[in-house]
Length: 442
Ligand code: TRP
Image 1 (cartoon, helix red, strand yellow):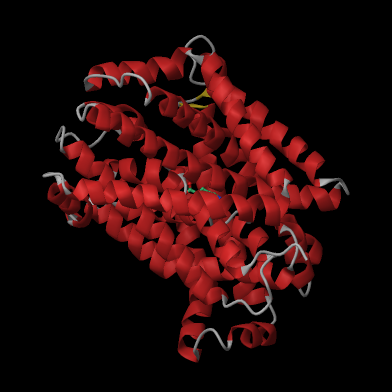
Image 2 (spheres, protein in one colour):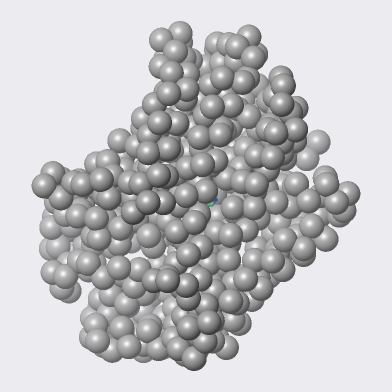
């Protein structure tokens, strides 16, 4: 059988979870959303919502043993056809990939930059990054192409010799890099400022916007609501303790986000007290900080961006696999062809995403106040919670009770089980519907 080993599954799932969301997005969101209070809500969501949905999603794959559509169909007791439509989730992955691959491309550019002279001063660095985004479409397309090729190559090789193998390499190296940079950052005077920035909540900064972004980000960061976890779990060895596996994944994902966040801000505060620089944080601010370290800075910059690249690739792979699994079945085609068909979609739309920031073309790819890049980002933050609601309701109401109890009885005690089900049936759907409505109407 072409199944994961247990360790391989944990590696691949952690690889899916730990991505640009943890190292690129999380730190700037913390600054944008007011620091420690955001972090607290985010942690709270991971524990009380994230882990419940993670277990539910894993369970659907583990019991259903198929791609996203098939697993729902097999397990549904009635309305099979309708539940099968949940396969739309797999396509959310393709949407995310369109911009994810472009950002991986930026990272490649900064890997190269680390070998030469890093920008001096924030103004220069900003200029460098912004002109890259708004006029250099040829390098952007080339790096996006490279990301596409690497991802396609790994997914073509399949679960065992592609995804599992790649993660066995990528994950330990990434962890070492983040941890190594973190340990180094302890030696900086600004380390304690960074700690208090991330962990000291200022509750006056809390509002519904902050709460919603924290919930949305919790979903994005553990890779929920899209079928990544479900698809990987379909290749789990039988008799795996999925509750334990879920805890490991949530633990590693959160740990990497926090370590990376503290480390990045320790570096940043050693140079400036200005924290809020948005999506440009790791691309604009960090290189300048590294530059002030001399040659050591080039080295730090290199390993940082290589780590970020690894994190991005292992997540990108997990965004593609669900669609590929589905296409192999419905088109009765080979894995390679399925990868090419779905890959070409995100590759081509990705090029449009690049042009949506290029000065001379952006007006054709902007609607209202958002360009294509921002629209896709915005829509995925709606689609993921929608997927989460469907999975929660499915496990909460549709899966036969007996099957549920039999599968989970050795993994949870009765009280925890009841809380989990209650959470899936009521708390999570209500919270997520509120969140989606707020986003749509705000
Ligand atoms: N979790 C990844 C990150 O933090 C992104 C990701 C991979 C993802 N697979 C996913 C997000 C599935 C949502 C659903 O960058």
